[in-house]
Length: 359
Image 1: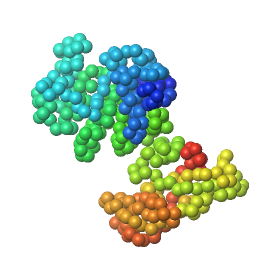
Image 2: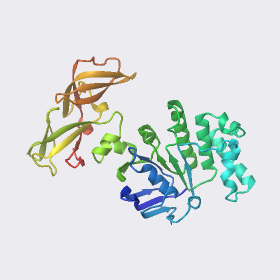
Image 3: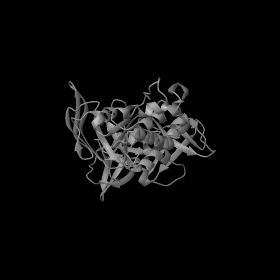
Image 4: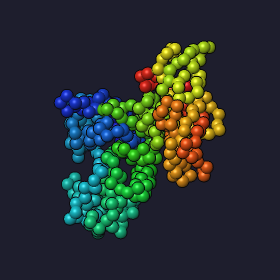
């Protein structure tokens, strides 16, 4: 196990900046997940930690050791890729031990490590099989086992579950979580799947356009997004946004006014009359018959019935669509007008720069 420290890291390809002044500290034994839209730089950052891509500037420390000039094999890392990258002509045992031969690990030690990893990943009965005889989930477990036997300081996962079907993603996600608890290892994990990020991570790093937007515990990002990007990226369906402005200030309170919701008050802070705002409310926080400062009305266009929870898509007075979660058997019908309310802690306000304003 080891800590990981990234300082002022940059990556450029000609005039194109892929990573811009990235700073991140990861504690010993911490599980950190990098998320963000395609092209945000999360996989590039992972490859730079691994030593597969060089830095244009900045430093990477693993276990308090500067590793900028070290080859991947010298960094004490093991990487699990989206593709399994197994040797088809080798059985599971040989796939897991192949890399150890070149690092001088004695045969008895190799067997000990394989046996330990096989027990963790339930691979004991598959050690003599070849990749062609394995399912996708089994192949991914072999790829993870190959990383485990190296006993690295840091595990790096690059979207390891994206090739699996939904059921296998769930079961393998559970195995990775259990593996982290058993090994108490430092893990950096890249994914585009919010469920993976929210369920696996000690902390989530949200990236956008080569920069870090916010770092925090999963529920901190969910309940207290630092800006509009994080608010819209974390959560599915995405947060609803309503255009607003400061309609007036009196007694230290600002009146938030908009055409698609009932006006409400909030602390004025540094706001001024006429300032542009964006009000955000998550679909699951909009309820019928509740109490709270935020109230919006809409005509139901469509209801997605997913079981206990359904999603109603409503057209508001300004013509835009917003989404509300409806639970239970009684769902609104298309064409019905519905009034929805959100409580104070669930109403998010952002200024003209997209930054969170305390409510």
